Image 1 (tube, chains in turn cyan, blue):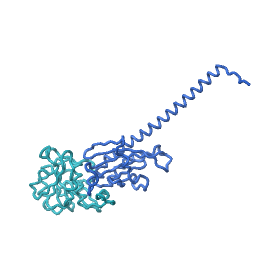
Image 2 (cartoon, helix red, strand yellow):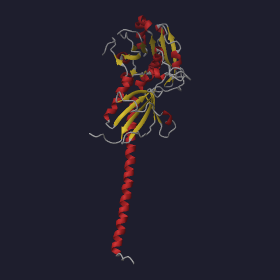
Image 3 (tube, one colour):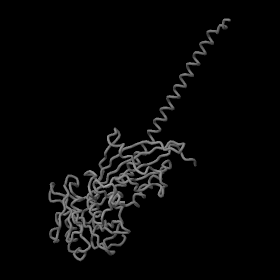
Length: 174
Length: 187
């Protein structure tokens, strides 16, 4: 249905979004449905930062999606990371499936800094990710590990949870 | 020939009777009009509140494109047997989910009347966690049914921000419409 929501400017018929355009919109929407503790931000004026770790599958899509957007009073910015040490300061961290081997090294640091970790790798395991974007029958679905999010000090809105499949930290049903 | 003189007593009784009948008829008309008006207002208010709650609960379903969840949310209308149909629309006005599921085309408007809402005195905006809810309402009589139907629309924006001219839709807007049968269904 999101396909129907995407329309090119001036075009008569809606244009179907690509998978990563949809995922970019989802990343932005997480900022509306998750609460971060104040300690997650460097200061009151710090922007809300969406980070992409390693390979960036979004191209310019994510930048276009967050352009001029804000999370509360904080402007939303996008950062690309190549090292786990750069994770502090991120509020949402997307780890592409090609970086699956490096998830473990990033996730531990992310939890400590109240970072919502999001990935889209295949397989039954969440590998410590809080939210996994799974493509099923051409639609992007959410698998949420509430325990991990709670352990990182994040509060996920119940509306989001109702739209998602809730899984245990090991990836299975709780 | 002059009409027979009517006794004053009888004339007085007639005057009192006529005055009383006029007063009773006038009061009844006034009472029925008031009842009809307040009944319609109450029904509209109830559906408005229900529509608002549904719209509020549908923000994530629209934001994360989950029609199954939207159907589940709309199922809440089952609690009110007077509500015969309801629908959620996406930001483009396309039907996203309907209640009851598998509703035939035409049972609900195929698009909400978004154009008529902005600027009307009854429009209001609500802040909800992570979402903005814009609500507007409209009443509509649907042809083909003897009973008066009402249609109330609640508009929910799951993602506040820019206009709608973006190449990529970064927000999802929904409208919940509930059709209410203005009388009790026969048991």
